[in-house]
Image 1 (cartoon, helix red, strand yellow):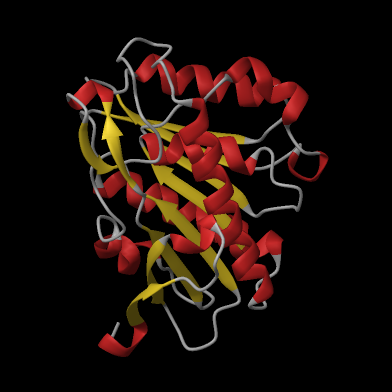
Image 2 (cartoon, helix red, strand yellow):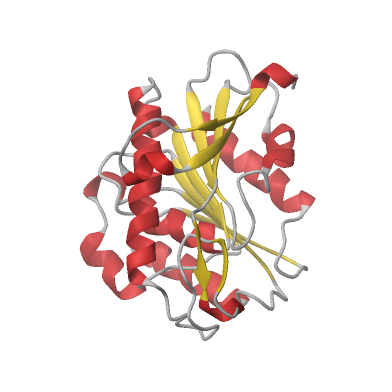
Length: 237
């Protein structure tokens, strides 16, 4: 990938969603698919830039990768320190004590990015929404409710937010959305049980789920990225 394929830009628009800064990488000159990837707590949109070449495959379509930076907000579990976060986390219990207002805010902002890709000529069913940790939680929260059919959703070391509300709130368009979920078996930040619970709930609602575990902590492994690349190929070819 040469330097002309990579750009850091400010998304246009005057509404709240348009305020998200993004990193964009095009794998080729004429993207007809897009992956919107949400980073984890305290990171930024540059965090997963390096994996883009690893996600490709022979004959892959040109894909636009969009890596937004989460807003900076105080995070309770980190002593109220301001950092990039998709929402505040009030505790590390299984319930997480999630900040509902922050979740709604981030879901609206990221939905705007999906709408932006559609306005730029990418069909909704050629868009994958992905994320790591709390970014994966937001990806699941939005993808299951987005009103237009998506290509799939990815949550690495993630979990479901407000799982008791999904059945009533999910959209008909994405009632059979394909999902790729993966988790480290010794994750001390997001226990694997949270990922397993998400995978089982999605499967129970009829979603085709590809579930993987790896002997690692709160991280991403080369094997995981290879498995994800294979899954993306099945969704975008």
